[in-house]
Length: 230
Figure 1 (tube, rainbow, N blue to C red):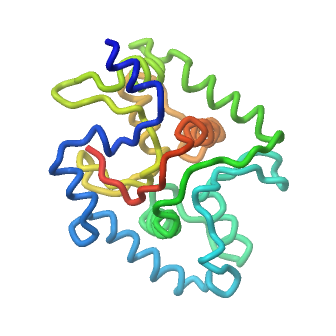
Figure 2: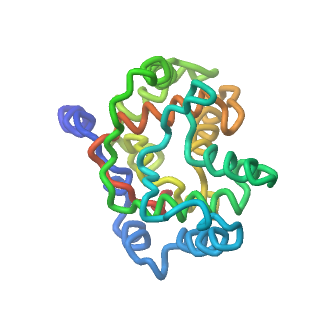
């Protein structure tokens, strides 16, 4: 129990909870399946004409979610991508669609190794509080919160696998269970369903707030996208 408490005292990437074979898969850019989406995202960047307005060297994916003055709430990276598309007369991509995952993965990968350190912004205080409350709220038929699994039992074994801290520094990540790349919100939905709770829509303000809180909770970790997770 002491070891578990020490483990939960500081942010630890989900990478540390993987077996050596899965860690090796993430580390190998040629074998890591997530890089297929990164490559597709690079092609989309050119096809969609993103380079006409944006300089890739100035994009910091680790800074999202961030406060959006136009809507007076948070916007995450996927939301920013779709806003740009709609500004140019294109339709927004559906959440978890291949193009949205690919472009998000490519942009996040450009920030690979960047330290997650959300900038102070008083305007985000209520959203941070909402995300924290979501993380600690018990829900579903199993009456469990995110914190029950990812803080109280971080490092413990569940069905032969170690429970991680639920950090998001590797997302979008390739999940072996699903055989595909997945966003943080798909993972949130899966966790909600696992405790037999009604999930929120992907891209919902509730999930964006939770995403923002988890960025703060994981401050000091580095971006690993595309990570590989079980």
